[in-house]
Image 1: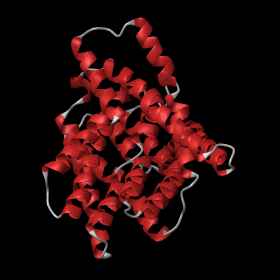
Image 2: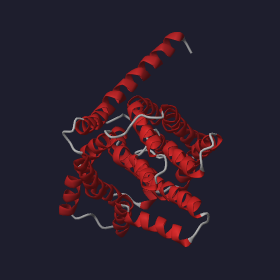
Image 3: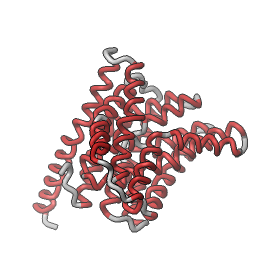
Image 4: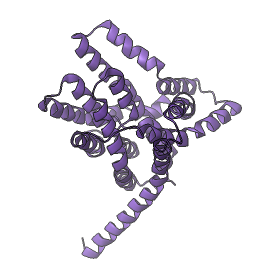
Length: 332
């Protein structure tokens, strides 16, 4: 390839990456606004908790139900997609677990470090942002990633923590996992939406408009809530947080990309969305669980803070790459 052509390709890619960065900037600006509002004391921690509850139980649930009700299970579920995503996740999960055990951390701490390495903020950040950046067709793959994270890994962490404390597996653990899934509004809203879609009936216009109005609050509300939740996070133990951030922002999308593009025959567009979803920063619900079980909450907190800050750049790079790979016009 001639040097002039190489330079032209680099310039064109840099322009695409800048365009993506400018499109992602408003999303992260909303996170920053929530962070500053809580950090300054203008928005109290109690107010942030209620905003999060509103988004989680109402706005985001309405958005997810509406997306799922307009999709069929066939459009969302694909065995190769599931295999590729889980292969990439478990590869990084095992690496993070192995490093934690080498550092002589216990099973419980290793489980939470592994959780930080593979669980991205697909619900509050991925659903609103990636559907805008990659188009409405991204809804199906993003919902699939979200469902796998919630069903597989949220269950796995409960099993590992509870099992290590009890010293054995029991029906009580499975009951706890089952109740957790049934009570999760994101799982419930997606399941109800797909069930409605399976009937073949169109969502009645007034109901659809109600869901659209309520769901529209999910994007700004969720992003503001992410920022508000970061305001009380500390950046202690930066060496471990830096390692877990590297796992989440670099190793995880790289492993998922290898699985989706090389090992398994995943359709290109779906692979692009899956890789972009894997590039998201550590999810806030990992901290909630860490705090609930009393296992390494400061370490998880620092990982969320550092990964979210750095993802402003890394997510833009990954989305620019996958958009170019799949021929997607970002935000178009």
